[in-house]
Length: 199
Image 1 (cartoon, rainbow, N blue to C red):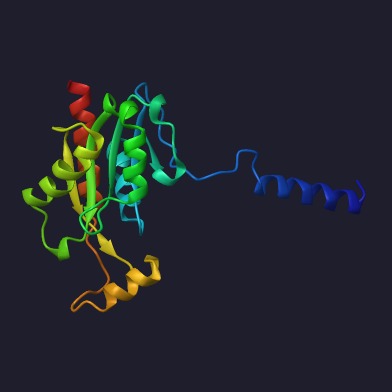
Image 2: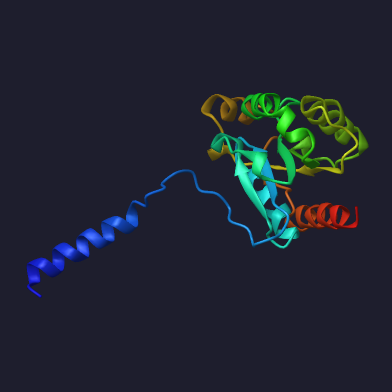
């Protein structure tokens, strides 16, 4: 093989690997399962994304994890877990809009809710679960009395929108922190999977 042909072939092969045919949003690929599970989350700074992936890990990785910005078709899933980061007492507008538009599809598939919030670095109690899940997320979805969990979140100034970062940094005593716990998220995923298998 001529040197020129070899270089040209190598370049074209490498380029083909860099640009796959189905280029699009990255998603977390689960282990195979006879029951199709999905975790849908809305996030600002990535804490709800990590919680969603860790919830799937607690289910032995059988749940596919989607960012709401991917606008996934969840009608192909048997079981769906929904959650999001909470800011000023609410999930992101994009997640709220998606849940409203897909309410009929999700109604029979919802198996649990989760929320991630800073809670001023204080422990989460029943009042946070009521405010963020029962009185907010469950009402948006139109399905209540599902297993749910509120996780403490984190603040990473570099991931915030500039105006939000500036506002946060001006608040007395606010600093970067990370209180999101992988083991708590995994335990919730295991709880949801075990509960569904027993039903």
